[in-house]
Length: 455
Image (cartoon, one colour):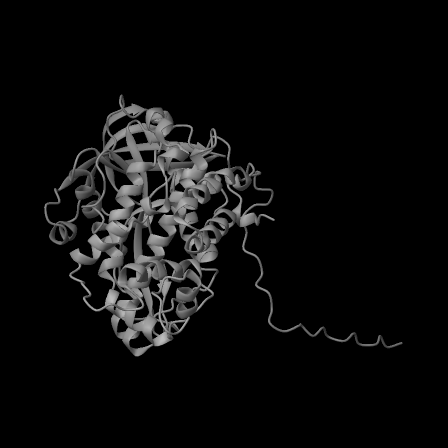
């Protein structure tokens, strides 16, 4: 049964966007022959060498196979690591039919975080090249937003990541602040940056600028409004645009009025911002687009200042797509990690390894879902139920160690055959307005007894 939170609209959500139908025609089941093309041994070996990790000693848990156990750490969130290794059957033959928990910990430490990070970065590039996605006027649609992760309460994690606090109290667990970039139609992550909880999201978002692809449009939440961030974002590379809601109280000068709801404006930067961000000019031109929904006016700011190339009719509608990255965070935490919100690892380096693994595992599932969606006619990847599709994909991945290599293509094709079963129904209109509901009380309320009425 589908939960209400898993329901996603299937009705023309990306209407303003265009498809490259030539790329879509090449995206067929025959295009992928085995799961080795998804996470190949050659790619894993390359990342190990680039990270300077080479093992001469023959171990029961080779690092090449340990990468798959790291992936399983996110997919089988309810199992301890030693059980995952035994479940995936990735250890070499030995005297004992199982692996000791201490051996798994040592293997994770030998592997480190840098290898998993490199595998994430290289696979995301390969998977994006193999996955067709719609665009807006030739621009790939991306979203950037932040998320917070919780770590076990150890002294090492506390020193490395810190806790949120105010004058009266501090949080119970150390936390990590992360900013991710996502391609919004496939939900495939393109980049990520994370650090201690006290780190400003603006600085983490700035780390994503070098990896942002050319000919792209990135949607930001209004909390990311900073001309110091937006200026280098649009001036690094070719046709890298941004779109963000206008922050309340923003001062600007109208340069040119294109229509009643479309104008070119000039924004002034502050002296403090120019000291903080190198190369920031004193003024920036941007485009202000307004849209009225149910009597309320919304203002959107964007770097797409060419009115002929970027029609105003579609720009205001684009911001609704930013919600896809919020859904992606929910899919990771609620469905893939089964609401077990505290990470496993007790040491900072292993926490970093685990976080890169969460992103890698999510992308692996989403890449399989993209293949499933495009095997159907007129279905986008975000229109499949992540909850149900990911459970089926993980189940099939678990079976791979027990089948012969010749049967792997059949298993891959079976994923595509099941795609239609995971298509979500159309989302119904909200029947109740948003409101703050009373929190449930921990203890039953004792009602006062009625006093007898005196005669």
